[in-house]
Amino acid sequence: RNFNIWVGTSGFSTSKNIKEATVMFRVENSWIEGNALARSEIKLVKWDNGTWKILETSEKNRDGTYTYFEGKTTSFSPFAVTGIKEAAPTAALSGLTASPTATTTAVPSEVAQPGNLAIILVVIVLIAVIGMSVAVYMKRK
Image (cartoon, rainbow, N blue to C red; front, side):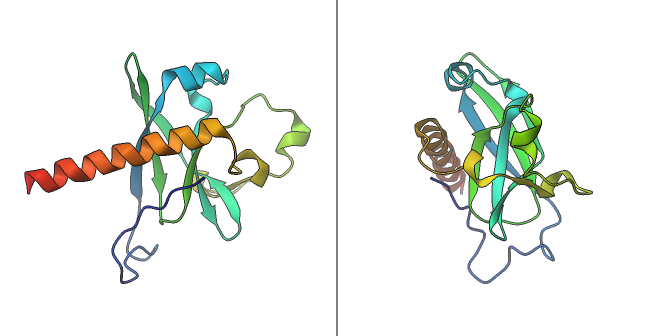
């Protein structure tokens, strides 16, 4: 399961108009530990031209319940939050391609495919956070 972030309705969200955007999200610490992931292995990925691209993702803060991250993107499309093992065997990494920027490395589709209950839960939490942020923003107006 993935999520979209909509930016207007008239084609505003193009690389011509967006130099760099930041997507902030949080992941439950219990999910990270339960899946034996290091925090540095949590990645925001974006669907782009038929493949998942790993976005530059960094940990920003941590409390007793959540770890907060931010991912950088130059465009908007379906996103997913996933854990990608850093110490994966070479054969598992053969589908990755290097490029000059951190935002264009391809992720093998099987890594972020829907169906993984843990990823679905993370996406639901992320959508809730975005919804709460919009509600707070609208309340301030």
